[in-house]
Length: 447
Image 1 (cartoon, helix red, strand yellow):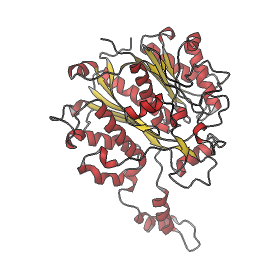
Image 2: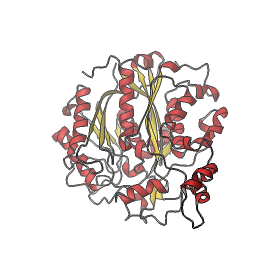
Image 3: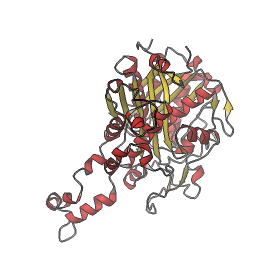
Image 4: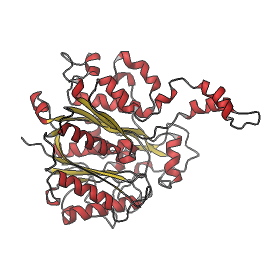
């Protein structure tokens, strides 16, 4: 038994991805096999070896917040803006009358969420500074020879940054703004464990509700890797695909034998988890039930995968055990995937270890070919896709996964969606640096 006293269900999904904003646009694009990877446009990338990326469609931020909160956008980095957009989509999809929705005049009647029972767990990355702002301030801290002078920085340079400048780049600001806008006052936490952050945040929310510390939680993650500083790190670690700048649509190739690296992206998703009894009482649409969560850590290396995928396998095993399920019960798997061969081989090996021969009999899905890798937000996009596949009994195609890795038994759908009734699904994620791994188990909702 998972040790929780209350059942926890998914009632709202708020994805923001390069292939669409909101549930309907995202799911339709997945089913159509669309790709959101293109030549990088956010900044001049001529100096980078990789010049492809997954960028969000244009959006007007004012459409997602009350008028009274619009001035706060001045202290929001791109990651924070994305999280707030995701939160709006999530609460609207769940038909929750939060403070934001009521203040915007988009609900009949008063707020219907007890703020003291409304929690938040949001994954975030290391938010990169805006280079234009930082460079302008640094230029005023140079000595007569053009060298940086720490004394001039303290006396003059810092004066050229707004007093609230730092608040744009603190990872906990995603949860801060989301909870203020929607008035979520129950337990709140920020998780900064790289690409594993969303799964860990959803898992913590699952436990928070299950043990009775909240009735509703908004959880998941968001991040933008579309920034010169953010792009420099994976380039220095030789993780980026640098060979497909002229063919961006095929650049992100998770679990393919010819994969040559990851594609940086931006986006994320926030999820509404809810106590089952509360969801039933208010007549909520229930997508699925969260029944298991497991986590583990790679203790061998902070930046290289274990060849045998031990930590990922351990996380999957723990999640299935937490769900009182076995490999024989699994009908769908959603491996993380990156397009970095060593990491993909390790994860495929982990799934084979835990699921065994069953892996060749059930469908697999990955969104990586469509949306790339956007750090802390990646897992929540995968989670939303897995929930939708389960709820709609349909497995969407996983683009750019062929030709398959020899070391993988994962059965991806290549072209058209496949009708596939699913009772139990597993989704995983892991941090490219840091070693954290996490797995979540979803079950088709039944009374």
